[in-house]
Image (cartoon, rainbow, N blue to C red):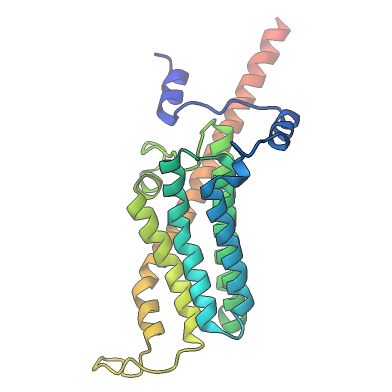
Length: 256
């Protein structure tokens, strides 16, 4: 078996290229019997977007409604993937809708936290930039290497990313803990009643306690984002080097 065929086997079947005009025509001519826009997982995705919008609407004046809408939107993130697999309705559109919703929802909350905690605004801005850049570069590196999904990471590329993406329980725990920390920071601005338990911190509120518990998970999530950004950068550079080498060989072949 050649080295290239071994690489294809490890990452799975490559994506077949479809002409953009053909893709637009196919999407326009969809019937109700099989309309990707109307797949159940994608309808759940639209519900997530609506709930995220509602949470943003209530964010500045109604913390209870905001938190409920935000948390339900995040929890549905685990439901749409399961529904797609059970119903046989996995789609590239659904995968991208899911990722875009995640990125936009979290970044909007971080924007609010930047206003609520102006002394830490630069930190929240850094987290937004890291989240977007790491996922964009990871998605693009997956596409240029022919992977059918950004979650198809092999352990020889990155053991950390392999553990993160290939174990649904780990993925859910890390993502949920990360969001829980940010939601706790939001609630800390509204919740002032202490827990009332005999602790070393007698004035500790429920929101502060949850923030302390979820902080390590948030830290882990952003370490994973850094690893993802670095690995994606190396993959893209490796593709550049391979393409430049192929171009040099073609020039040598033409020169003969």
